[in-house]
Image (tube, rainbow, N blue to C red; front, side, top):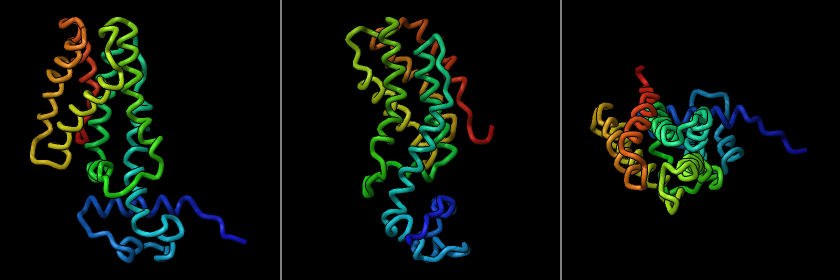
Length: 207
């Protein structure tokens, strides 16, 4: 009879790999299991080899992002909610900078592409609510706007989480998002207030 897999072992190895990334320790088959109570065979059992470990790390990044998005509550201001989702994206990247870097390593496939794509859907839905409540033009494409918002967030946090710029750089997100949302029809004064209120939800790792 086949031996039942223990999810705790899989989680242990993912956490171990994430830690090794964080301390810049090379990840090999042997180094991954060193100091644990599992053998190198466990890497094959749970991941099919080292490529599977990298796939799992990519997926874990999106899993944690989805969990962060799920904590964002819906308010009566969808533009503010869209901004809060962006701050959640930034906060997740700063909390897990090494996983964040691996998330976008296209050299390895994802274990569950649909689950990763679902993270963008949070932004799409907020953009759609903004359109339906007439904050944005009726012909605004929610997916396109969500992607543009994600692009702004990704560009900023990439320069901070794994780059040379200080956390204060993230503040440029306020005028950038404001300009984007105004460009698709939001009232300038109302937009600034929504974005500024949403941005207050940003929590940096040392706060």
